[in-house]
Length: 263
Image (cartoon, rainbow, N blue to C red):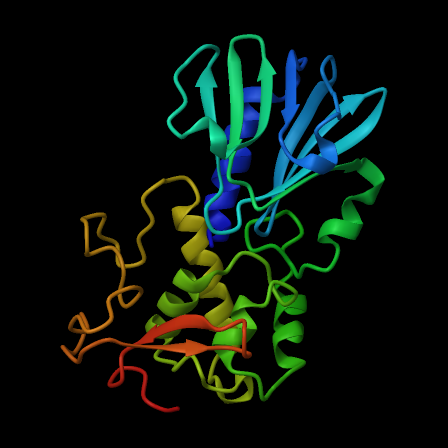
């Protein structure tokens, strides 16, 4: 599932392409909204909220297009008439303005709701690491509310703080020397961990190639994520991977058994 910085970049891309412009085309290719037509409306803007995207459109009344990339989704922006880079069968939304077409492929969620209903969609989320509502103290309080919970699970829970996915969870735990199964109460410096998580997303939010090591070279961008059985960059111990989380909602967790001893 995309990380918060990936969703942030998608919001910026849509915002730059569509904001302040009149829609010449709207095509919602999901059954619940297939007859919905916002053509002639004006795009107010697009913002990210954790891993959610909200494209605000004024058309007789204020509407919000709520989309979520989930595992496979993406938004592309093309010159009008330009060739799409993914098959049309994967298209879920098309938004067109003069000279530009924005296409949402394989979006996990597509909803058109009255603007005032946005809170019902994203109000459950914790502070957004890349958002104007970022509140470090609230994020820390959310994490500490379940002291026995493994830190890896707690970081992935978007109700605590919004924007961290599997990749940043693994990389953040490694750089802090914390095993992802360590209970929140046993993490030595939770404040530093949260601040480092925000720093990681901030550093990567403007570039398409994510890196936590400082290198943008292929296979050298990550410390442990998806490097199972490869040698740890610090000590040479093979990186380990296991499934972490509640039954049915397990996520892969990567760590170095030497640099992150423990559970």
